[in-house]
Length: 226
Image: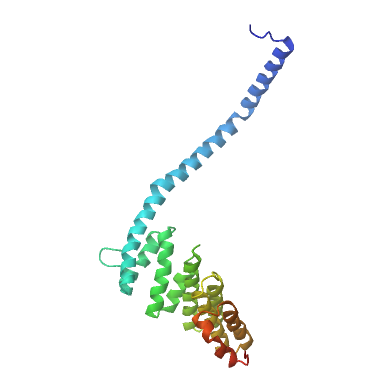
């Protein structure tokens, strides 16, 4: 047996329906515009991701593979500039800007220019590189420090070396090496107290490393003995 509705209930339902109709009549256009914009944004994002970004990333990775092969063979100029068929790191960076492969190509390009003695370009490309892989980032900071050092930009070099030595402190090979280089550069420009701090950090944190094993002699010549 169906429920018999009280007249008051019926009137209440009519009011709710009337309010809903009034709301829709008043706000239907803004709601539809908002929904349409949302659909366009989501559709545009998905279209960009699946039809532009991912295919572009794939092509960039394929190009990077060939350039990396030349890099591993120590064919530095070919790795940088490519051959008659395959792009080099520089072209990959410009052609596939915004991809992960182009970002990694900046690291390689900076390394190549450092080997070639073109320190300004080494700085240019190494500064553009960043990664969440901390050991790789530490290496990039270290190479950047080397490039600045060759350019006699001592403050920038020291800053880069200190970053290289602290960004991933668990690494007992890279970290003590670049802390040492920061200390050595401080010492070379007469900032002995800062040099002592860097050397002492190597001694305290990485006593078992190669730099840790020999650091006492550097401390000793600055007046710090065991």
